[in-house]
Image 1 (cartoon, rainbow, N blue to C red):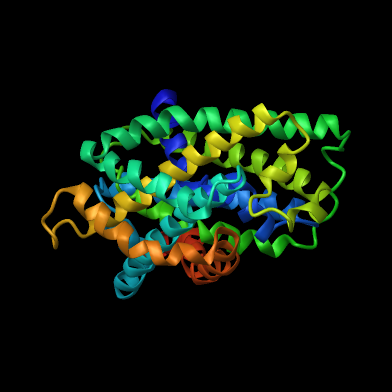
Image 2: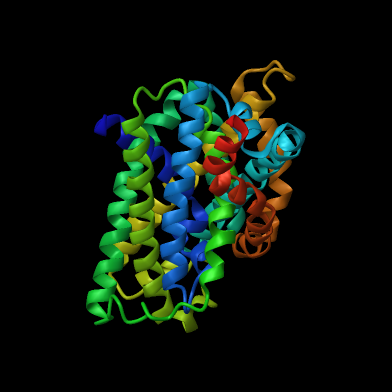
Length: 339
């Protein structure tokens, strides 16, 4: 049970940690100063939402997200949010491609070269279908989380920062709602597809609580560190590099590789969601569909990594508030319907 629950836990964390989160840009966009209560609320709501989505998926024994989406938002809005998921996967994959450009740009490579460097292996990955994505994801995420925690704890220790120096600052608590809502649709898209693979309800508890606690702790430590270098963040497309500048070049290379792989796996997940969604309409091998989808995405990467996150992530956070509210109220509303 615990082993299976951890497998779903890393799937959830992998859905959350992409270029925006791992780089620190997404956290800084929503949190920053006065956000200790916001991060706590996010962690609690995230645990609850994961539990609800996995429970619905488990009860329906779903193999794709549409039954779960229908249960959460109702039949009338299912079509609307189905298209929102498609658009979300498209735009977030664009952000991942742009994130690769920004990562290599930090090492004095051109932005376009960084984008091309992710496109080629991304297309080749789909020759092996889904297996390659699952293997890479399960190997990289524990390493990425461990690397992030190591860097953040080291930075806090070296800079003699207080872990709880900002814990009393709570005025930005409302940011928890759009930040949690931002990540709801991809969670439904991913967790809705594994309902027929979850064997016990205990797995749901392990996955939900584990992912919420891990993300809550990492988010708090990350945000606490970013507050200390807030004046430097405006100089960096990727805030993580503002922290890494205090350390040897080798550490920056290591974390940059980890960040790039996280970007790659998230881009692969987004592309997979899109190509499988339209595979029945365009009967071609997945790698050809991936090449077609990525070709459409390319022009949008010119907007830049931080610019895309600055405008698109808050927009999705607001649009998904209804889904978040539906999930939070689902246990009550579902009982009322039964009665």
